Length: 474
Image (cartoon, rainbow, N blue to C red; front, side, top):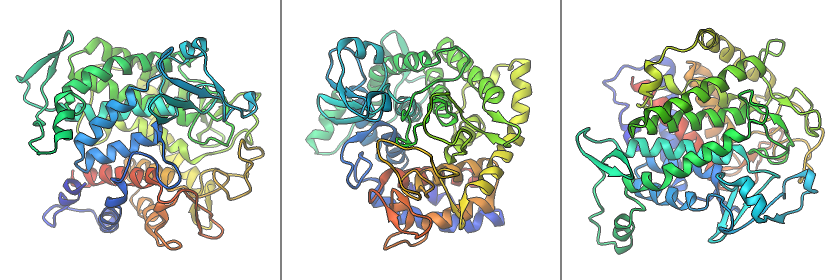
């Protein structure tokens, strides 16, 4: 991420509030660079590839200059997209409906899951879907990150084009490796690290993944439904219309539409934009709670986690998703920017800012313990398959990963001091390492727990910092 850091020169104007943040952030980037680039697995005891976590790690790799490595791993991950009779796939380990026992999928189940990505890729020929169905966020976040990276990797002169399938695609400005490293050169020549060839391989697969995710809107109201443990909080037993999962879906739609726009596929991009507008309208109509002054999940009546109206830190991800098109990361869909939104959506978007501020304030007052930001508001009444004690794992703990997302959300709405406060917690020394290196932290003891070093948390914070630095530069 040196390019982002070096852009902060003394000749550029800085607001007083961001100056304190920038100094702390630059130090954090320097201290975490080595850990961020060590592997695609989440780190510590987790040695397999988790698709949702890989989406953050790959984005950080790209921002840090490891472009060929990111493209190679994108190719690998999409090669494990679920399809009938492709590779061994187990599912159900996180599902109470399946008594938390894994089963090997049959051809019928694989057809039902077709288009989704697995939760975990263990090795060649063996993957896992953790819940009863593929989790929404693993597939959606990989669509988002893949599209985000490829849209930037394909930047070039508009007249420099080549054909991919039946579509005209801009030739990447990334030159073939001139290294004597035989493997790197070979990977480029076969297309695994050539952006245009990666586009040719993954775009049809991402289109199929979009179709799978759209099918999860069972009642056609614009919101995707999930069953227990089919998101990143794999012990909390959320089931229903979950705010966080809608945010992942929106990011997939937004970033993929931008990539399709760059490929000249305006009609396909327009379809995704229409889906995103329908989702935003549905979230605003159904998941906004006036009495709670924040967005809350609609849990199915059969859900066994809870309590019912629990506020979770990951609702901040929705604030990131709705501010994505106004953020300063350099690419916005031309299709979307030229289109006049329907009257109802226009009215809804006028309310988004005030609702975002209200949600962040509710989080600040309700999701804090001894000044620690917590991942869940109250003690969970039921968890599984891991029975959690209070202040353990997802049960009222401090997660650097989601705190990085909250920091990004607050930055999008210019809450400077609060961003600085969160980064202070993340960058503070723990026992014996900075808190951001741990999977989660017990807020009573300040003791880091879980996997160490947890690369997902580190990279999520680094991505947030890169986004904020871009904002400061502008």
